[in-house]
Each structure stands twice: as C-alpha cells, then as structure tokens.
Amino acid sequence: MATTTQSRATVRSVQRRSQRDQLMGPFGMAALYVVLTLGALVTAFPFYFMLVGSTLRSADILRVPPPLWFGNAFWKNYEDLLAALPFWNSLWNSVAIASIHTALVLFFCSLGGYGFAKFRFPGRNMLFGFLLATLMVPGVLGLIPSFVIMRTLGWIDTWNPLIIPGIANAFGIFWMRQYIAQAIPDDLIDAARIDGAHEFRIYWNIVVPVIVPALAALAILTFLGKWNEFQFPLLILKQEEKYTLPVALSTLRSLRGTEIGVQILGAAGAIVPILTVFILASRQFMSGLTAGAVKGT
Image (tube, rainbow, N blue to C red; front, side):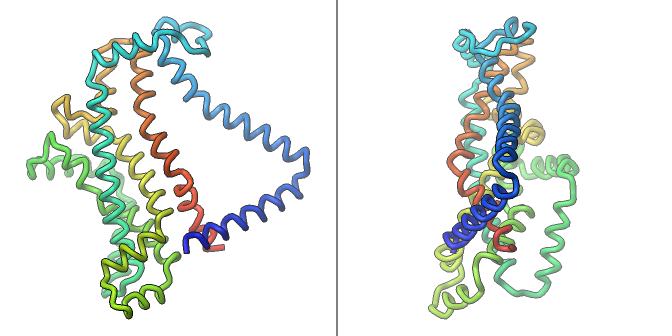
C-alpha cells in the first residue's frame, strides 16, 4: 500500500515537472535554478558561519569584516567548553529524553489514531473535536499548572515530566488518524478480523508497516520539538548533571563571559544529533508529508 502511494507520487511528480519545463522554457528554467541556488546559499550561510565561528576566538569573530574561513582555535574552544560545563553528559541527557519521548509518542499516537480512524463508538466525533480544540490552547498557558502537577507527583528534578506528558498528544493522534483513514481500507481490517486476528495483532502486523512514512514524519517533528524544549526543563531540572543541552548551554554565557567562540561551538554540537535524525529519516519524512496530498488529488 505504501509502495503504491509512493509510486503514484513519483508519477505525478514527473508529470508536473514535465509540464513545468514546457511552460517555462530553457531560459525560465535557468533563471529558476539561479534563484533557487541563491536561496539555498542564503539559507545555508548561517550554518556555515556557525561552523567557522566555532574555530575562532571572540576577537576574530567580532572583527569587521568577520573572517569567512576556518581558524585554528577549535581545540582551545573545545577545551574551554568542556571546562565550563559537562557537555557530553548534557548531550546524552537530551538524546535519551528526546528518544524515549519520541518512541512513546509514536506508539500511543498511532494507537489513538488507529482507534479514531477504524473504530465506531458513541461520542467519537465529539471526543475527536474536543481533542482538536486543545490544539488551540497556547502551550505557555499550561506551564505553571504542569509545574504544580509535577511537584504534587514528586517528579521535580527528574526526567519523568520531560518524557511522560504529551506522549498521546492531540497533534500526533490527529496526524496518525488522518493517515490511517486514507491509507488503510476498512475491508483489510475486516478481513484480518474474519481470519481471527486480535486487535493488537492487526495494529502491529497490518497498520504499523503501512504507516511507516507517517511515523517517520511524526518522529522527526517530535524529536525536534523535544530537543529544542527549554522553558519546562529549566523549571523542572535543578541539578546540573541532569540538565538537557539547551539548559546547559544557557548557562554558558554567565560561566564564560563573552567568549563567543565557545558558545558557538556548543551550539554547533547541539545540532549534530538533529541533523543525524533528519538525514536518516528524511526520505520517509518527505514521503509522509506528501502522501496525504497525493491521495487527495
């Protein structure tokens, strides 16, 4: 099923590309590629300058015009970074929290989406509407109530408040519900039930293999959101050895003054896991984002 959807997406993409080439002509296509190349360079320049800045000291970075090539202060910045904070420990904390939370989100949101998509029960539409309505509530409004709840549970200064809340969130359930409703026909589920398969086996052996692109897209979005989370971990975590990387890096300026090169090196190290996750799942991510649109055309 997923392969068929991807094949249709590929065919339609080729057709659109052919029509676009005929309409624009060779000069129009050349101008388009020039604009796209310039846009890509402008987008990539901050990342390049961040890598360059991680190899320079503050005096070089603040020079006008700033150097655009790598310096020789990388190891000095690296030593200062490790002396200022437990970088690798904070990196591990962020990786562990984001990975565990993402795995739980994929499991529970896909289960919830499967339930809303393929089960008929009283109040289903009302419950799903209420679930969607929670998306309209700004997350910052729940900051203080969440802190009070976590303190009541005795979860302050632990990983539990950063992993457990949100594992069955409204966006994830909505995302999976829409994909499952479009990608898996009811007849396939009914045939499995007639063959004697129980509901969890249908979910695990039939539903999950089909929704891998949607799971990959949700995994990347969830991992990025949890990785970049700053305010709530700052409220919850008290001990330095439990800090996530964004919280640890926020203390770097007060510890190292205006040593900009060290701060840039820390920020550069923080994006490596994000880039790794995106590179590993980018193909499935794009497939998951486009599958719904292709199905609707």
